[in-house]
Length: 153
Image 1 (cartoon, rainbow, N blue to C red):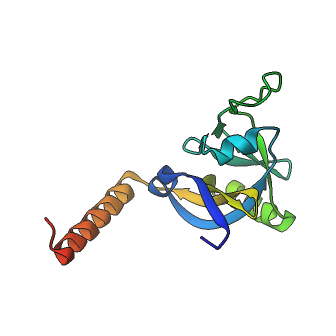
Image 2 (tube, rainbow, N blue to C red; image 1 turned 180 degrees about the vertical axis):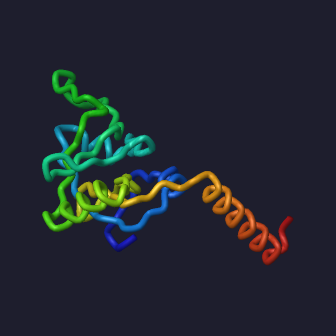
């Protein structure tokens, strides 16, 4: 995390379910009070994913709760599809990876950078069950080693 960045939401499930090959920083096209709601931490990335349609990248199934103090006439669907802002060469690369190689696009974290909401998007390959078990075994072994080193049981 660089200086001037504040993490607003993370998707812990993404690193458990997928092998993250590459990450991309992208902006999000937001409406009205969505930014205030995101700053309050009322966003859920768990079920989210991104897809490439007509040379544009869209974020789907990410829940941004409506802002309570906002205008009641300006209701926004919490699960609406949001456009992601990426460079054209990055989009071309993602098109190739998702269609030909079978990768998925997964949101990893949402953060503020210089007052703007950014999304870290991961190019991911799904893990099999035995891969998840190996990761859990490694974490457990690392915890035991740390516990032995500190002398706490």
